[in-house]
Amino acid sequence: MTWGSGRARRAERLIDFKQLLLSCLPWVLAVFLVALMHVPILAPGPFMPQLGLLCVYHWASAKPAVMPPLAAFALGLLQDLWSGGGLGPHALTFAVVAWIIGGQANVYAARPFHFAWGMLLLVLAASQSLLWILCGFAENQALSAPPFALQGVASWLVYPAIAWLCGRLQTAVLQRPVV
Amino acid sequence: VALQSSGPSPPPARVRRDRWIWLLGRLAIVLSIVLGVGFLVLSRTQPQTAERLRGQVVDMLAPVLAVVSAPMQGAALLSNWVATYFDARDKAVQLQAELDRVQPALERSRALERENARLAGLLRLQQQGARPIVTARIIGASSNSYVNSAVLSAGNRSGVAPGQPVRDSSGILGRTLETGAISARVLLINDINSRVPVRNERTGQLGMIAGTHDAQVKLLFLPPGSDVKLGDRLVTSGHGGVFPPNIPAGVIAKLGIEPLVTPAARMDALDFAVVMAPYAPPAPPPPTLSAATLPGLVATQTAPAVPAADVTPTPELRP
Image (cartoon, rainbow over all chains, first blue to last red; front, side, top):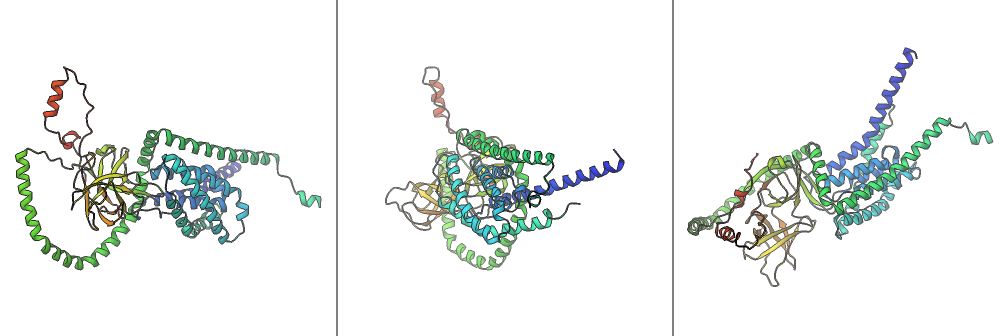
């Protein structure tokens, strides 16, 4: 092994490490948004959008490699732990959304934003219904459905902002060559 | 055509790697679903374990929440300050008028207070006050589809334990649910699982406020034909031994079979909260009636009630 090849290998490893760190940024952004959901200045009521789920949906449809189901599961579990509800409903829902939408990423590719926004309605209807069932199971009581529907509507309305934020991150960091 | 369609085949090592990645991806999906179901079952069957886990994680994440919420709380404080500044003159005039109006009532109230204290002294009545344990900042609040809780920046180390009443400067906020070393979760009064015994200040009628998962709570267990009016103030009744009596709970905002109540606490601007000792200690287990225990039992019954303040450990009051 020559001196030059050793240096090249080290440089290659460094680039790999940088790429790994950069690929974690979407997850870190999602964690930040989940933390933001728990800031105590917002009015009580089910109007808080599912910021974490929106991140999962965006990355699963745009770049599934950065939000695999296991990462989405960890994010959902964090939300379950933070929110004080039963463990598992968000974790399971986020993982299922990442799995299903991640598998359909080629359907989303090269389609306009409105397509993703429209599809989100279906995804939110399904995910909020699943959450309602799972939360009811975890809490061992029949929960009222309208708050989940309201939260779904609020989530759908704020999605353009989340997509813009994630898009900025994607163009600013993830698509830039690592040096 | 055949050459164009097939193209150069990838090296076998890459094919193997891709196959492994695919397999690991599938395993991760299965693992996520199995873990998710496992956590759900754990929440359902072993809620204490889930609570402990939550307490530990919230402890670890409390600094993150504090950092994230600090600029938001700062902005809220600033906007509140600006609004207060512009509102100050009107408020001063309004308060002066209010003061003039209530001055005679205040004098009467002072006289009654003195008389009450004298009578209480005569009766050797022991007033059980609400003893504060700690004042803490609220660093997190969950307001999703089915949970209304807040996270306090004080836990076991400051003397906070599950089941302690929590209030802000305006009224009752809720009770502590789970505690970690440096953080505690509070079940807010607008959570659907929350129940607080209250009394109508005007009529003395007892009831219970229950969360509706909305900004308002509902008043339950009123007898038919109860005298309830819009604007009636509700205070805690002290029943149940958790919430000390006479802490403002809310104001009747809408009449009905289950009247709606606007909480006295500022649920939309949670900043600081006071954790208090429970009003009354839990009742001791009933003693067995035997010749040996009977004298002790008689002594217990005749001894004056020990106030809650004497039972709980010495407070560590922090600013």
